[in-house]
Image 1 (cartoon, rainbow, N blue to C red):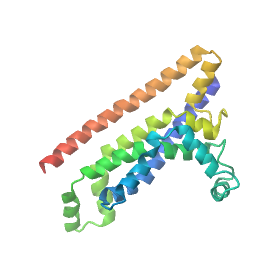
Image 2: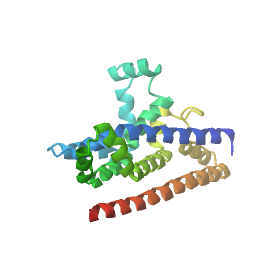
Image 3: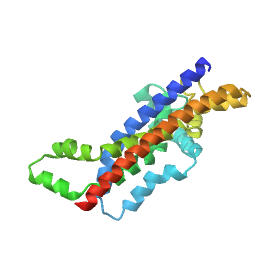
Image 4: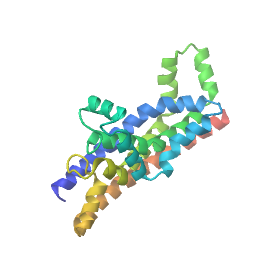
Length: 230
């Protein structure tokens, strides 16, 4: 493998970790609010969250570039916040990844919150648990497997990003060139040996993520069974 391949691999894992962690922080309170919301607008909120599942990644990338162009309010805010424009930057592909992988983290959390029996929360309130204590001593332990599943799904999905990253970040080695783009470069250059090596590494990482995901889901099945008997 070339040095640029190791750099692309490191950058890809870094992008996946940052994206998955940020999405957990963003999605956890939103999933809790949405799971308890029964208003007429709920289907519209759910549709907005699920949009990245059906929209082409290049479409998302294009409109992000338009929305955050230097001559817009969002673009000026982004430059003042980060010190550079959205295009051709690592922070830019992080923002794109947050939107693109949002439903893959949000959906498991929504399912997990829907499985938490309200009797647990009522019992905790009766025992005098504050909202903070209920969050750390009730929700987090009950949803531990769900949180790990959401992180694994977000991580695995971000690993394979191509169109969105290429649209926003371009192909800058060490800055925005992730494994999928490096692999495309090798195939274009007919360097199939390097392409095979990168593909096998990406395959192995993705397989491990899926094994962990199914392991966590099996734990969730046990959790659902316990709820069903309560």
